[in-house]
Amino acid sequence: MDRGWGFLIGLLGAVWLLTSGHEEQQPPETAAQRCFCQVSGYLDDCTCDVETIDRFNNYRLFPRLQKLLESDYFRYYKVNLKRPCPFWNDISQCGRRDCAVKPCQSDEVPDGIKSASYKYSEEANNLIEECEQAERLGAVDESLSEETQKAVLQWTKHDDSSDNFCEADDIQSPDAEYVDLLLNPERYTGYKGPDAWKIWNVIYEENCFKPQAIKRPLNPLASGQGKSEENTFYSWLEGLCVEKRAFYRLISGLHASINVHLSARYLLQETWLEKKWGHNITEFQQRFDGILTEGEGPRRLKNLYFLYLIELRALSKVLPFFERPDFQLFTGNKIQDEENKMLLLEILHEIKSFPLHFDENSFFAGDKKEAHKLKEDFRLHFRNISRIMDCVGCFKCRLWGKLQTQGLGTALKILFSEKLIANMPESGPSYEFHLTRQEIVSLFNAFGRISTSVKELENFRNLLQSIH
Ligand SMILES: *[C@@H]1O[C@H](CO)[C@@H](O)[C@H](O)[C@H]1NC(C)=O
Ligand SMILES: *[C@@H]1O[C@H](CO)[C@@H](O)[C@H](O)[C@H]1NC(C)=O
Image (cartoon, rainbow, N blue to C red):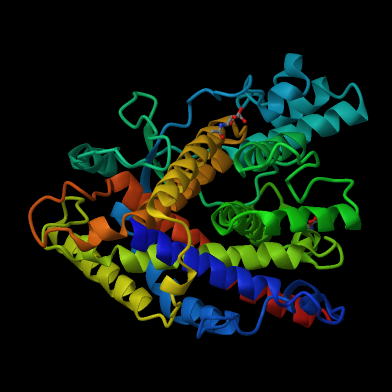
């Protein structure tokens, strides 16, 4: 365990240094600089810099990872989207609005009829439209081909949930269903406003190791926050021990990544013929521009890189598990399964070769007992966050939220299990360390999301440059 901690703390320390050192630059000029100028350059204590990460990810990793994630093993994720929210009464986006009208269930009613009968006021009508749009865009397409349905029946899973960071989704439940992730891309759904706010607020508020004394909202996106309060917030954050700070930064990175996707696959235009999805620069700027966000945006982007490095590190550490001869990416198609395993190993070797050289030991802090306690704290908070995902009102957002928290939870499990992985037998079953199919699928898809975000940042950088 301690090596896992030593590494984690080292990584956190290093990344923290890198992100706290660049705050005093001149106010940036162009739109691109306002989002990105603080997110560049060398990362202290590490032989790499943001540009190296970008190049490594965008040209070497991303294309291969995309290919892997399109394979049958990785595109079908079993998930129970029908679990009730354990924390408060589940009020869906539409329930919150004019319930009596029930506009969201009425797929069968032709659009023309609906708009005519509900047109009692302009405002109500707008609400209904907004609500319908959110419901429609947020819906999960659960269709699977017959062939796939047969195949998934064969997929064996031997679950062992002893050391899980996430609430094991009851995938045995009749409510759990396979979802085709390729049919349900993460993109703009119209799910925003108070409901979405509430989720993120609860995640930050309840689970980021907030000390009793802190009164102001932890969610840095919360409105009505002045400059001095912001400084209080960051000095509070700096006062936390490095691991707890890291927890906050992982959540913030996840939040940032999701917002990059929503901005990159925004519903730009909708006609009866087609929907057009694409980059919405305004949306991106509202979330990441240094001036518009009072300095928050660049910090969020740095947290995204931080999350990237953590997941990248976990993948490099877990290579021995996948290298064992009896590990298969089982779907029943022997040739394809072997090809996919080769591709997976190629990707993991590539990741391992990434020049991320931290001096892990010099950052080691705390004794064994303390490390154990922190691991347990992390685990409990993380499980909690995965349960909060059951409260997300929009199904598609719930799907990707669950998948990404489970993926990050799996990455943390790996980092905390370094010794167990190192001691794994080369063949035969590994009882000490095991990953279930669910964990493997979520780990790679979650990393795929962050990898896509990093790639999208390049696109946004180019787009922002082109408008000036
Ligand atoms: C882009 O997003 C903004 C909100 O940030 C919205 O007002 C605008 O209509 C969007 N643009 C397009 C073309 O959809
Ligand atoms: C989990 O989240 C709930 C709801 O926000 C909160 O009441 C509870 O204190 C949290 N528990 C932990 C261990 O974080």
